[in-house]
Image 1: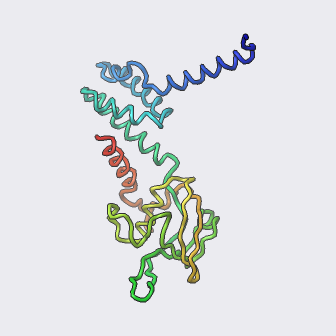
Image 2: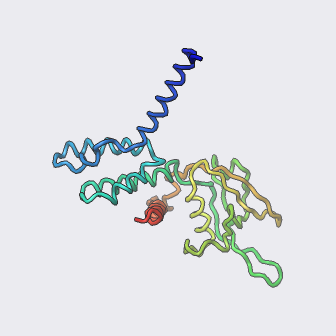
Image 3: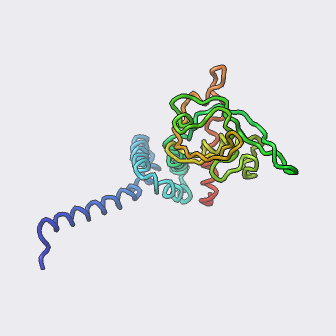
Length: 234
């Protein structure tokens, strides 16, 4: 039985869409050869093409660039693939911006039960306006003792952080704007939980009281890329 013309047209359109999506996920033809060209303009044009492709295919392009980086023996190709790979890996992970709750806090110790050690937490000292902390009902003097599955008294050893405040900040900044986290809070002697959708960390959060930008603002992104590279087998 013949396929009705309208269904035939729709089927053809779907096939075109699928093929277009497949082709766009592949690295552009000859782009690596052009990156190794002796002509500066050709190299620049090739890199612009590769950069555009990588930005449009962030889900798969870092792995393809990693493969090209390992396979090539040309210094120009290796350098370009590495820098673009790093850029896209970080963009893919932190593209929406690092997470932010919107509190000023200080470390505090909560007494444990008889015979048990005190546990560390972070006490909310101030809630910044128009932030998730305000929107989702955090209160001054709330004490956060855990975030998601991370106990602030006992963080993963590989983090090498000995402060509950640093552990809290590290975890929040490892998330992206729009991610949801669960805060485990002690309020008035009772344990409660609050789910919070993080916002993008503002630039002002990385400025010290004297107006200077805090050093190593990109440390987390660098650590993430190095970890990704290690998982890929370098």
